[in-house]
Image (cartoon, rainbow over all chains, first blue to last red; front, top):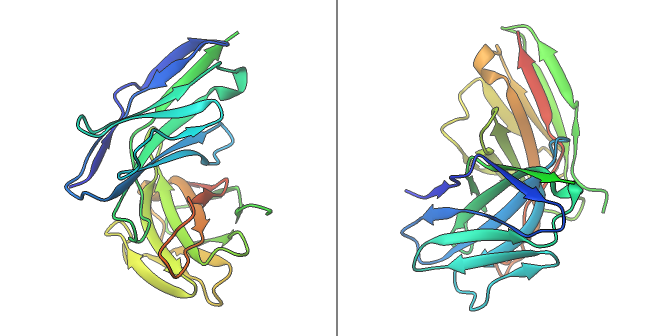
Length: 116
Length: 117
């Protein structure tokens, strides 16, 4: 069964430094997609970055990059040059198959606090 | 792009009452999803629609829950005879999905926080 594991309930980072949020996944499907979402206290889930299982390069979106290690089944999110506005919950999620219902399985999340 | 909107933002109800939530997706998105998020957890899939057709329902969606998307635009989620265990954030999301099977990421609304007393 597919599963997402985020082992860091909470993380601190100093403003302007980089931080890595861990995510490991388990699936038997060779075709899958991995996502990271940010959830501020307002409650909205904000899409950050996507990595497909067949993508040759690690995904990057501005200050966000995804460290995709397929053999280790990990998809860690790296946030560079942290900002105070980055303080939020971060969720890793997975979709099995390339044309499924787009049903996402989420991890339990990591709360990131950026210190000034 | 006005985003996904949900109404109400908060709902407090007494056990046994019925509640209904509304979701307005991004206008050009043909898929609409409902998720439930309890405190300290990630969202859990409940159901999704492609246009007006409800294509998949989770086992989490008991017979007290019903979702509709009558004209393929907005959707409603109704919970009958609410129980305290129904207290959660109910998130709606939408995405576009073309005939080649390419899908956009899910765009979520701000959610409806339900408290059952």
